[in-house]
Image (cartoon, rainbow, N blue to C red; front, side):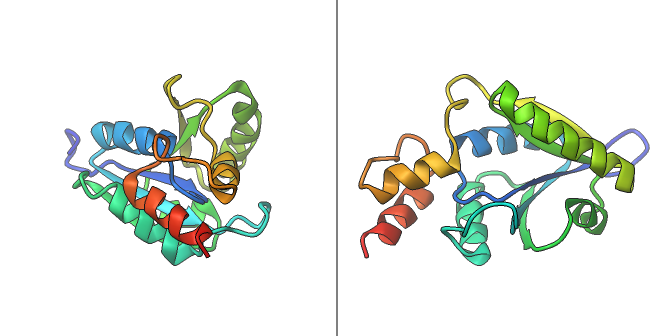
Length: 165
C-alpha cells in the first residue's frame, strides 16, 4: 500500500504466445515494485495466427507465476487501455529487449497515454534474456529443438505436446 492507502496496480499486457523467461523476469520485477500486477494475455490482430489459444496462454501464465502471490492473470480481446481501466491499473509495464522494441513500444505508450492518461513504464530485460522471443521459440520447438532453458517448465511441456502431434 502507498502512504495514501491506495493500492498500486500495474498491468503487463502481451500476447505471451508462449510466455518465456524474459516475460517472467519482467513480471517478477514488477511484482516487487507494485502491490498488484495484472498480466493480460491479449489477442493481437497484427500478429499472425496464434500457436496457443487465449485460454491455453492464460493457463501457462498461471502456472508460470504461481510463486507470485500478488500477480493475477486475465485474457482479453480489447484495447490495452480498456483492460487498464477495468483492472484499476495506474501504469502499464512493458519489457524491452532491444532498441528495436523501443520504437514500437514508445508509439503504443504515447497512444495509450493520449487515450486514457495511463503512463507506461519500460523495464529492460537482462542480457541473459534479451535474445528470447516467442516467435523464435515457436520456430525452434516446431522443428524439434530444445527450448527448456528459455521457458518455464509448464510451457516447455505444452510446446512438446503441441508439436508431438
